[in-house]
Length: 138
Image (cartoon, rainbow, N blue to C red):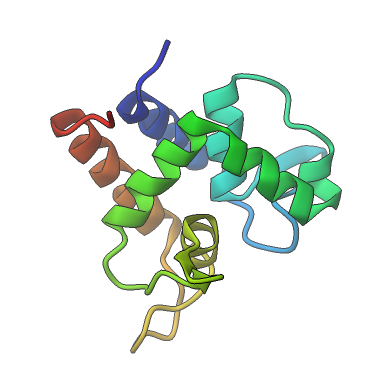
C-alpha cells in the first residue's frame, strides 16, 4: 500500500511522461492516449484501477468519485497546501480543494499572464510529496 508521498511521486512521473489535461471534463482522449486532469490523476493513481468512463463525460459524477477517495483527497490536500500563488475557491462556505488544484493547472496566478508550466506543476507536486514525507497525513 502506497502512502501519500509515494502517490504524489507517481503522479509527477506520470505527468512528466504523458502530460496533463487542462480542458473540459476530468479526462479526454487525444491521438488514442488518455489525458488526465491532475485530480483525475490522483484518483487513478490512488485507486490503482481503470478510470471510470464518467471522467470523460460527467464532471459531477467524476467529482463525487474523487471526493469519495480518501487517498486521492489526501494527495489533493497536499498539492493544495503546496500551491502558494492561487487562492482556494469557496463552495457553499467550504474550501473546494478539487477545484483549487484542478483550476490552478490552467489559470494564470494573480499578476501573471500564463498558467503554471508542466515543470512548475511537477515541482509543486514533488514539494507536496516532500512535505508529506516529513509530516505524513494522519
